[in-house]
Length: 333
Image (cartoon, rainbow, N blue to C red; front, side):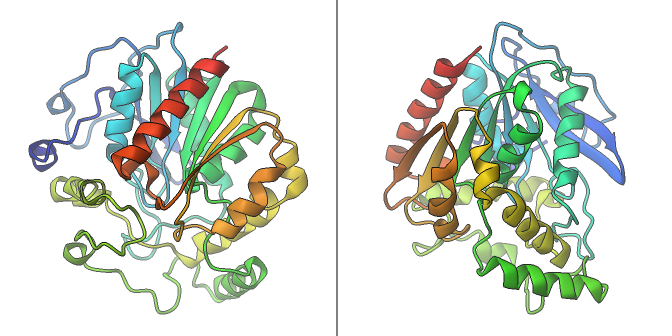
């Protein structure tokens, strides 16, 4: 499994896959308990049956990783490995419609949902499936995952020790919110919710995987290119672009939550936010507007860095990891 990714030097996930039934499908998560040696991925078939969690180290902190839009567990294997090597339990999820958690759009590459509460329900189910339902955890969310980390911390404040935001999506990039929300609702009403937005075209994988200096994701060629090796081994992990239903759900969630000053003020947990200085994937203005409303916020800005902060130049990732691990240690129960 993942022969080409291995040959490229990418680390493998070392825990156990868990498949959780959810209304309308099955959600895949991956759990690696602290102190457990890595499992050989060859021991897990391409289409495994549901597996039990591999246990947990109750003396370790637990980090729940919430990936971004179109992302999947394997992309975070270096992050999972580093957190595990730092002595932590790690849980990561493929959101419904992403990775190995199926697809629900008209096109198999499209990411679809009608309401972001579906993602929160999936996270609840994954956490319960690995026996973490009574534990207090750290939420680590990138991009859309950052948005969902804030929403989940508001849903389950007593179960969270802190939230780490990495280039969070406080709102999608196209503004104004009311216009996109209204237009997408109109198209949904015409029965187009499962379809791509008008004029959307899926770029060829051979084209999009080529590093270009003016790309919007990262200044580091190796960081940019690494994500695409997974698709060589398992093409079904790839997603590209949202449905109209997802667009409407994202803008509704932003208006109701992450752009809502009163809602943001209600979050009392410690929050660590990493912000890209050259942000073009999510709305930079929305991030600058929203974050100051969070009462217990520690913000780190990376001048010149782009959206994929975990795949940025080493000078960025070194600072990010130092701050991240210090935050976890400071706020552990």
